[in-house]
Structure formats: structure tokens, C-alpha cells
Image: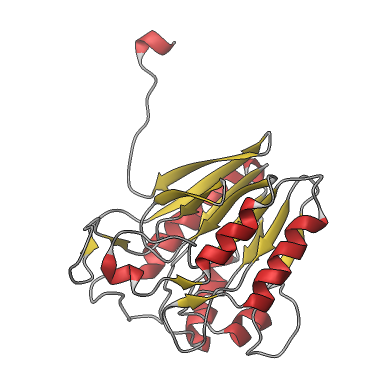
Length: 263
């Protein structure tokens, strides 16, 4: 089974820029073009939050128009820049009060996606409550016949970039402990860090996907938030034999060729 992952799209209304210089619609449009080309090669698209920049209805209007060309099913979790009510009104999500966490499960036959809402309305850092973590434990344990993938916005690990780690995930250690009890968890996928980062968590691999809008500079340690002119990107994940293999696809003009020795 193959998944594409888009994250941190930060879509704005026309004319508005991200980080003072980036038109976020350009990167997402390129990602959508690539996903449309891949077609049936991809089973599901995971959209792991911060889909808009400020959670405004007009931004979600732009987002919907951009995503309508994606032929695959889209599974959504919110990010700290999103509005839960707007997401519920526009995507296939459980009906509940607008302020309730959007925790949900998607069964795909050969895989269970356990989608965990790590957001706290009005804040950039994340939190998972004891009630949510109990729910996570139950949903993972409910099906041991297929691999589980945990899908969330804030990754359950620190990036090493202090300007981002101040907005990390409260409850990450407990989440890691829960995941460690279930050997059939194939991976944890998230976003938030605007960089491709992987780390062992709870006996599996947790992966932070780069942004379709703007990437963070790999400046480890202390310092101000610094962006880089790296290209927009998305991820491809392949689930085989209970393990998840992840690739980063950079969205820039490139050519590919087959060398003579490979023919």
C-alpha cells in the first residue's frame, strides 16, 4: 500500500504571502500536479495539518479548489494553524462540536490509520491528553491483524532546532510508551517541523514530512526561526511486510535519465 503525504501547506488568500516572500499555492499546486500524474499508484493522500495559514474560510476555499484535482482519497488531521470547524465542514471527518479534537480511525483493509489531533486551539505547541492517549492505545490494540500507522501534526520527538522545539508536543513520552506496547505499529507520520526528519520512537520510526510551502533551515541548537530556499516537497510512503519506507519528493524542475550501465 502506498501513501502520499502533504503537510504545512499554509494556504493563504490570493495576494498574501508566507514568511514575507512565499506564495504557498505554488508549492501545493505542484504537489497536486504530481499526485494527479501518479494516479492509481498512490492509494491514499495523508494531509497532516497546517493546511491553511490562519484558518480563515477564504483560505479553505482556496485549499479546496487546489485539492479537487487529487484523485486519491484524502485523510486529514488538523495542525495548529487550522480551524477544526472549517475542517469538519469541508472534509470527511467525524461529526462533533467544532472545538472537540478530531481523533478518528480509517480502516483501509490492509492497514489501520489512527489519526490523532495534537492541536490546542489558539496555541502553536501541541498536546495529547490522557483521554486521547487511552483512545490511541485502544484503537491500536483493537486490530492486531494489520499494521497501524499513527497520523498526527506535531511529531512525538524534538527536532533539535530550539526555535521549533519550544512548540513541541506535550505528552510525547507517554505516546512513545503506548506505541512501544504494540509491535504492529509500522510508523508515525507528522509534519510541523517544515523539514524531513526521522527518529526512532517507541520501537518504530517517526517521520516529519517537509512542507509544500517553505522549509526550515537545518540550524540545530539555539537561534531565531530561519527559513531556507529549499524547494517545496511532499513524501511518499510504502507499506510492505509491516514496515514503512519513506521518500521525500522535492518539487522543482528536474530531469531524470538512465545511465548506459543500467540499460
